[in-house]
Length: 511
Image 1 (tube, rainbow, N blue to C red):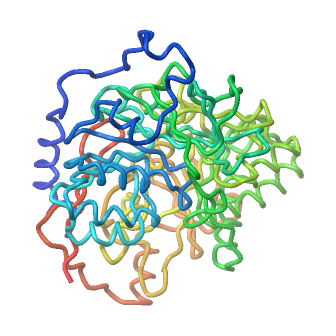
Image 2 (tube, rainbow, N blue to C red):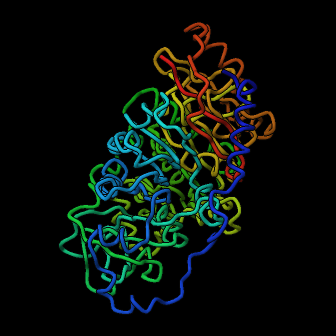
Image 3 (tube, helix red, strand yellow):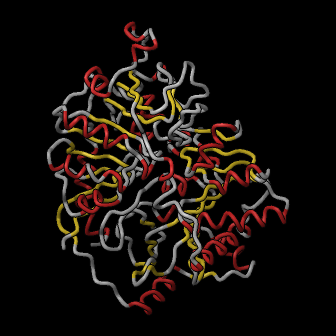
């Protein structure tokens, strides 16, 4: 099913999304001092008590963050408790959902959860939703888009349940801890910050209750209503699992080398440049080759942005990157760095990538390296729906950074197994081709025709510059024409643009 055939469904989805679910209580939460919360210990309670005192009712929206990624324990813990208490028809608005959230399937079947908003879905939950599990389509937003939607009230949160590595009894919370009793560490809490700022009620869950004041903190007591001490909020060892990976794959290493050459010869590789890399193996590996060129040429970066990894921390500690701007720490090294290093700054999703935030970091970004599941001949990118029609990824900050960076580079193999990655039209549009500048494959590099100066620089450097049509035809010559996917008529997902409009829809897969 091509984009033109989906256009009526997109228009229908746009009409639905243009009708706000809530007509009041938009914008910032009431921060008038509450007389019943003047004593620190008045915020401490059990999870059940926090739920009851929050005023949560059937049909309301609850939110979560995903900084523990595959090690998260908060979503399942809270939704299990809500099911036990008899809640129904809840809207789960998570910054992203992972394999570990498989138990939500039963809560959807039992009517506890009837709506989901997120940046991504993975695992069995994604498989079931792709096949039509939910009556209402999942709403997908980029990280910057989610931050904007929360701020403007398009995504109104009634109660936010936010896991923290440490908190005092007043709710000063952080993704790290200086306590000897620390059980978990997640680093930046960038995706939790908009929820804390704008939700009607905020519940902090922590497994390390520390003496007042917990400083420095990522979330202030002024935004927190209740504090719940639990056995564990997350497994730190699983933060870097899944999509975040180092690679020893020869193809990924070749792609990384090619991406590094594009950067070095792009015209943007100069003293004081800024950069963000994605979480894919080739994107991360490219940092190694960029480092070598930075040392050889005496070039230093002003800042590195996004999900910060140990690779970036190393360059920063070597003096090659002046500052780290961290919306999500992708491993333990990065999480520990943000705790001790004042030049490693945690930012909210809005400060990171919201289109309507004048000071968001992406507006100052020179270079971004991103991965893709598919790229089509018009440079449109899909990072959410697999070649089998199953949702298996996340939008993340992909369209945010591609739109704002001076140079956006997509790293993508020609084939994955017997599946082409360069196609006539992407299965689902996530990042518009108008925001993509260069596509790097192991068979050549394609520069967007709207960036002829970049193409000329790459050719002058001796790099193999080709067209996406040539790459697509090469893929077809190897594996032939793939059969069309068996999509049904049910819309299971609505993909929002970062400006709040509907970009695309996802249909159910039929077996």
